[in-house]
Length: 180
Figure (cartoon, one colour):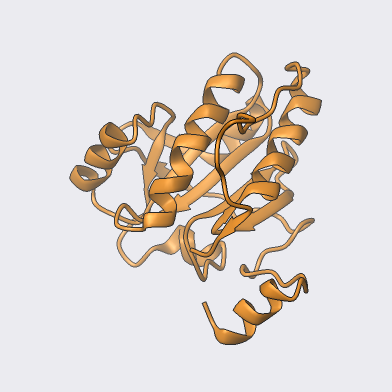
């Protein structure tokens, strides 16, 4: 992360770390999972909102974030919403990551050269997008962003009618932010 972005974050100025902001149309894609199944964004959106989480297996902030995304997946597994990971690594390393961090939601593989990551304008991982069924980006957060993940959870609760419940437990020590 650049000094300017770090300083902006520290003094409370809002600055997006992706090129795509709320209200922008999410680029469509078709990607395979680490197990070989094919997923298409348009098909996922037919079910309901999609939480799209980009990551690298070697990223410590991604490693910290993904158990909370798994918790989110467990809450909304029977609802009209999808939690989807997009890995910037190969199938073997991604499968190992999913096993180590007990990730049960679908994790897709960005192709060589990261065309999907580039289409979303990523500058850092993890980056999490909440995409509405109409294809518009509702929220985007970069790094581990506690408030951002709480907003994503609240939006999913509202859309899916899943009863409200905190994503983070009251006895957990969870920072407000960790840069990716």
